[in-house]
Length: 131
Image 1 (cartoon, rainbow, N blue to C red):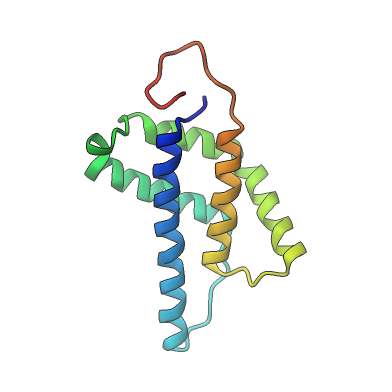
Image 2 (tube, helix red, strand yellow):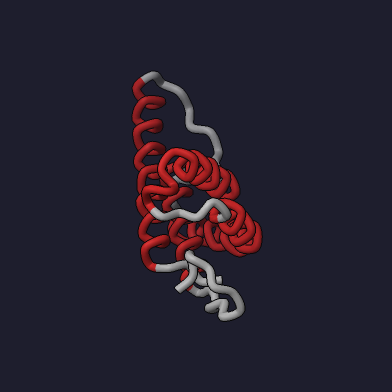
């Protein structure tokens, strides 16, 4: 199932919001002297699904997200989880990143968008989220 460009655009906005939130959290933690906690790609995906649930409930109809979209995203994220986790792990080890929440989210969401855009068209059903 391939998602439309409009849906991908909305996902990118939500992902950007989550990365910004993580950057703000890091600044707040640093200001108070708190150590950063390890953060994984599966946590970034869980955070994305949580914000999707929230946004679908609050503005889904206004932005054109179908009610079954959360289930579709959960299925796609579940399918991509291992591949994304490996990609993020490799990137962190090659690039020598700090593994911060913001960095892991950014890498995870980039890998997820790449995965979503590589999905084949589903010609068997007429779905509002497909191209």
